[in-house]
Amino acid sequence: MTIQGKITKAIAGFYYVNVVGSGIYECKARGIFRKEMRKPLVGDDALIEVISGAEKTGNVVDLLPRKNELVRPPVANIDQVLLIFSMRTPDPNLILLDRFLIAAKRRGIPCLIGFNKVDIVGDSSGDGRGGSGSDLCSRGVPGECMEILAAYHDSGVPLYFFSVRTGEGMDEMRRVLRGKTTALAGPSGVGKSSFTNAVQDNVHMEVGDISKKLSRGKNTTRHLELICVEDGTFLCDTPGFSALDTQSMPKEELEEYYAEFHPYIGKCFYQGCAHLSEPDCAVKQALHEGKISAERYEHYRYLYEELKEEEKRTFKRR
Image (cartoon, rainbow, N blue to C red; front, side, top):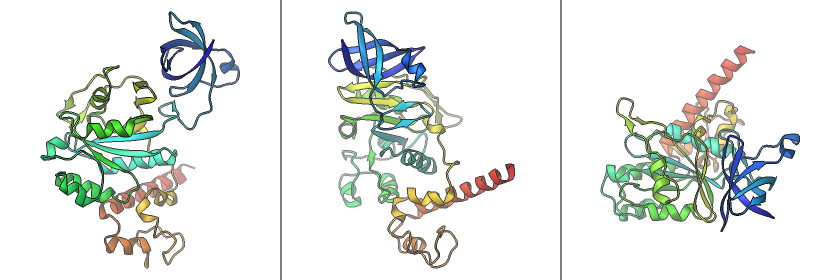
């Protein structure tokens, strides 16, 4: 008998396949995968041949087409990436946030941004949903959250504010996860493991302590695994995703990942304008008029200069 499921974990040559209504099957991959130089990945939708229904064992015999694939970490069929940062301990590193956004967008994966620990920065009675500034003010969202929302309002990425500790905003987070396979990413110590524990009861993720000296968390995720929240809903805490960077990207490509620049690109006086020191730049004019976030523009400038320096170093090594 052949049935379909999703590979949720791969350890030492065994693949653990979640089959809706039947549970987890422990499987080996058929030798044909080695011959065809294909390797099953966590996240793959797979066909398995059942060896024992009672013992839940089988063989992976085929893989369905992938919608996408990450190399680091090796995972397939991600519907969205939830980038989790915290409002405190550690404070949000928004340059790092932009790096994450660019890394995910370059791979064509939709993003969500979530800020945990809103209870630390102020008394908020809101539901955690992103929205217009006036809406958020009426829901009592703290001013520091409002500042971040203002900076990313036109980024094309929805923002959510929540507290795993108090439960504030968590119902909304469960809603945006439902029916999707979501990769969690973000720096250590922001509460990714605590978030995972809060939205499901099947797997308990080890929660690390915050290093007081460095004000960052101790990495607690040891291997790649899809965690089933409910039928059709999976979470993937992705060790290694934070290693993705933008250094291999041409600097001219950077503007593509700043959605707030898009209405002005092509309207500058100079073709190929970098939006830095050139005169008659439509992007800088929009910045001066307050149509583009000054903070996001500074992130763009910082990353552009970084890419420029990397190109120089690469040229010298040749």
